Image (cartoon, rainbow, N blue to C red):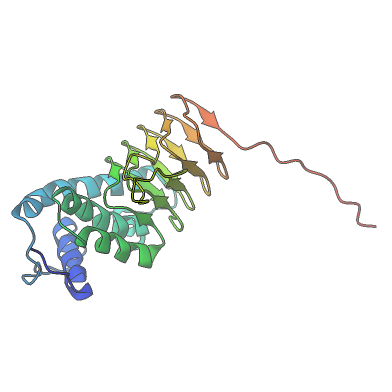
Length: 228
């Protein structure tokens, strides 16, 4: 049984993964020997690295403010968050207790981006700015998806068992490939957003959206003010 890790052990694990994934930008750090993890996790590190590099590519493709790859790796919260999430997701799939959630909460506390380790996220994932993004436990996100700050992929309601505890059933959105969701939008419940869809900002969405759609708030009404 894996003991409850210390924060120092988890930080060393992340520093080790950073040095493996981005050796040109981070000094080599040994894996924490005091934190024994399944061999299957270490075998998955090349796949984790490949996915994180695809996330960096997604930022380069979607943000004209980026000057080079190193800026994304060293400055953008997405890279820090995703190295925690992608490691945590593999550990969650392997049934490792506590550590996956502790890893994602470390990233949450630093960046304000809250991703449950059980959420499924495809390659080339981009979060721009990021503060306030929430991705729930049963959310499913395809490839080449872009989220902006303040986006919530949450649950609309819960079902309870006979003992009054919430059931762990699918209750968060599914975003298919090439979906973009702009700032401060909430998508709630087990709804499906079809591929190549754009969801505008400040939208409250609780229904399915077909592929190749655009969902927008009503156009703001502009009134001139008489300032006599």
